[in-house]
Amino acid sequence: DTEVTQTPKHLVMGMTNKKSLKCEQHMGHRAMYWYKQKAKKPPELMFVYSYEKLSINESVPSRFSPECPNSSLLNLHLHALQPEDSALYLCASSDPSGRVIYNEQFFGPGTRLTVL
Amino acid sequence: AQSVTQLGSHVSVSEGALVLLRCNYSSSVPPYLFWYVQYPNQGLQLLLKYTSAATLVKGINGFEAEFKKSETSFHLTKPSAHMSDAAEYFCAVSDGSNTGKLIFGQGTTLQVKP
Image 1 (cartoon, rainbow over the protein chains, first blue to last red):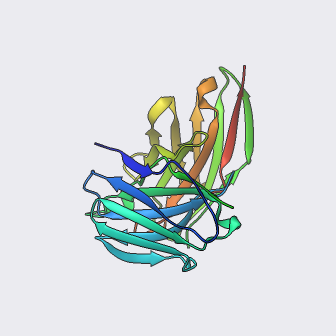
Image 2 (cartoon, one colour):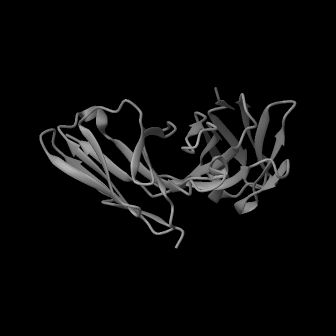
């Protein structure tokens, strides 16, 4: 299985809602990533988990809260978001073992988030 | 620090014509370079990667790229464009750390005209 899955595919939420995005992979990868992507722009890295530990937080506002319950799952908890947070949220995974800098990231299809 | 510059935010070719998407990099260490494609409303898919094994890299869907150290370039080519190649293309370089962090270029939109 060489797939990264993300649910839901689309999400519409109000600024006072709490919601979660889910990402799953079964490739045995031990590094997982959250990105935010605006239209016609490259993905912006938000968080990196390596061996289930948060290794990078790119100064993301606290209204985004990542969680890595196990090596296959990655969640992004959302609370009190702003309209400017509307974007495509992408999850990716890679194998950090060995010569990690060679390893490409495998991306999921993304969750299209709209904040009203 | 590593960086990537993609020349041309929008490239338009006719079906059957050569595709050339340009990518130049800056890296303080031997670079590991990637080309990704993104179709509308989808995630990124790896086309090919350079990891110093060979300077000419062949990827999926008939794409290839040549690493030229003297020109700090990693341009993506395809001999004959198909309508299905219309998409957004991103060049990326690894930041050289053990997190596998990627530095992306700004992207190039490829339009294929019939």
